Image (cartoon, protein in one colour):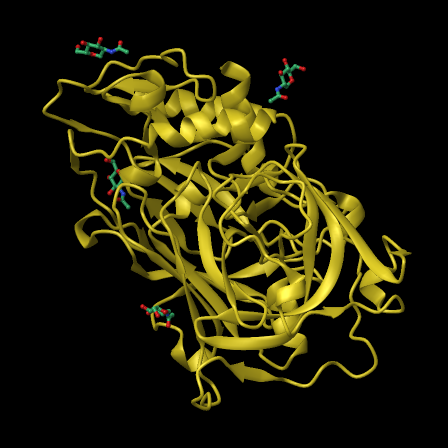
Length: 444
Ligand SMILES: *[C@@H]1O[C@H](CO)[C@@H](O)[C@H](O)[C@H]1NC(C)=O
Ligand SMILES: *[C@@H]1O[C@H](CO)[C@@H](O)[C@H](O)[C@H]1NC(C)=O
Ligand SMILES: *[C@@H]1O[C@H](CO)[C@@H](O)[C@H](O)[C@H]1NC(C)=O
Ligand SMILES: *[C@@H]1O[C@H](CO)[C@@H](O)[C@H](O)[C@H]1NC(C)=O
């Protein structure tokens, strides 16, 4: 059991094997012309952005619905800003039976990636087919052939996107058909859309797990349509890992105290180590152990009106609170201080997560985990409910101003979320069936 849940946490760090991060995709000859292929007969007005739906968290991952092929087959894809290649389980497949398993033979828009295509360089060709293989941090992997295929995002088809047709896959949630690679590297979807002339901003709002609401993912948003009031911070580049979106973090705060952590702890070094990335494919933020310990101890010390309790046998978290039977409690807020100025203060749902199924009714855990590496990861639990935008052309990312949670429970950038009394008893327990499924998926 214990290893199961630690596996889950690690699983969620979907970061790509370093061998895959070199510049793989140069545009072949001239880049493919911008081609829109409306799936509805209407013409697509230029400048229309493409919007897809994001479903509530399933085992720590967010799934987004896109269409693949012609006619488009609906696919639920893990949304991952921490990796590049978009792939899906694909016939013939050594995977569990899943709905909508993609069959390239039934799609009229499938094309083989030619062997002289730069994306092939790394893995080589076999029988004139361009192979790929991606390994994620948790040992899950996908293997197969690269295809050029049409992806339909919110009713708009984009032709000739390089995608992976995964014949052999392991890991990830069974409910997912594949993964949508939103990283910053050459093969990622935002980069490919840029090569297709569909520049612009992509932005998303991950739905709050406590609500049964949907989130959204918009592509090719013209800058004029980005919501005014977004707090922008520069993206930092790590030439060794173009996939990752690094941001400049200068500190962490709990309640009214800024933790005494030297600023260079968060720095991306010239050699490319350390730094802080934003990863929608990591569930809980990862802090290097020494920082985590300061963070956790301060958090516990500031939780004045509830007895701090540790772990409750939780295999992932070491700091949990038994809030059952309490009418209301006051919990300290947590802030990220960005070097560029903005301060992002989180609401309680982004700090404490309900762990009823694992540790018992009323058990909430501090949703941060220690790691042995020097890189920090800001995970999806911390950013759920907050509108997040990436302008990869200009090299900025933005937070807010909108949320996709309840307004009274909103985080603020540059602003304040007054600590509020959390009410108990309205949490939605995770689906026990999925838990069973998890065993099957990982141990088959
Ligand atoms: C993205 O699309 C969703 C739904 O289509 C919309 O509610 C949201 O405001 C859009 N976001 C931006 C920044 O335009
Ligand atoms: C949490 O507290 C409640 C009420 O005090 C108690 O009944 C319950 O057993 C506690 N849960 C755990 C896991 O200790
Ligand atoms: C980190 O390193 C310590 C000591 O080497 C080890 O006990 C621990 O299991 C490691 N933790 C992780 C998450 O790898
Ligand atoms: C965070 O908590 C502190 C201490 O309770 C409070 O003074 C501060 O206003 C809060 N910050 C925000 C942004 O809500």
